[in-house]
Image (cartoon, rainbow over all chains, first blue to last red; front, side):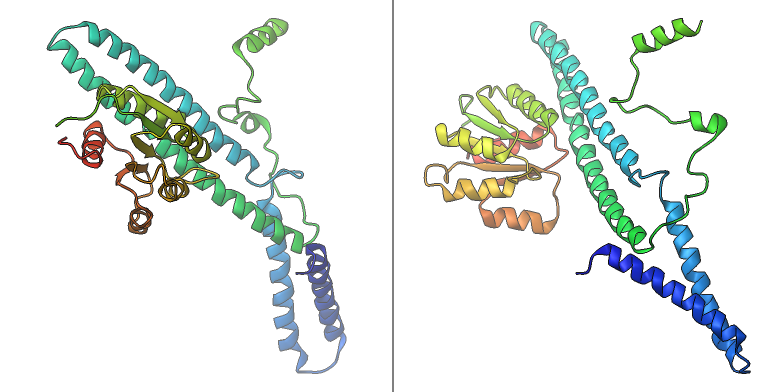
Length: 192
Length: 129
């Protein structure tokens, strides 16, 4: 397989060559040239549009396309595991208390606890599904990177960086980036 | 005849939550002699040191899958007779066939309930549920 940079330069060369051919045809006096020029111009415009559409798919700078999305999805797995752990802690506590009670209370509580254990399997199932989605996104990212490479340098995507209040709407922060309540309190103090 | 409460069970899953669910449900069946492993390799080493009476394993794990573990168990003279229950979200027909061909004793699809677990354990251990 040829290196991707070679593909990129060949594609750019081909596009440049196409534009040169169009320019040369335009100055010719032949009456049959118009149809050919229209077809070639259509092809050239189409390549240009495709390039900018692929450019628009990229995030700003050299950020991976789905980098943040996959991090967010993995965070869901971590958060649901933590929540499931807390639910199980509570269920185990109820189970220990139920063991000290007589019927019918203990039976009813044990039955409820069993249902909690069964339902806690949601974390395993959702985790597996999310892992599958992350895999698909990563594979798409590799394919798009290869396509982007093939089109050479692309224009910066329009609107990659949100402005004003829109730039403040980022949703929950990833744990590794999130500030703790004490960080916020400290910051708040410095601002007041 | 009822379940042998003293049986030694090895449970294998890469999700800690699922290990905890299995352990708790087994405890409700009064089966307390349970050892956990987060992956197939660790589980296999545990079994080689001290063969259990029952293996309950997830399928979708890395690097050794539950199916790989099942095949290793069935290829091992000391372990091949041990009942092996696959507990997995993999529910396609071809999965069940592959597991059966590899010698699985029973197959539970996630999410499952306590009654199903009890019934499958009873079935592979040859006792009434």
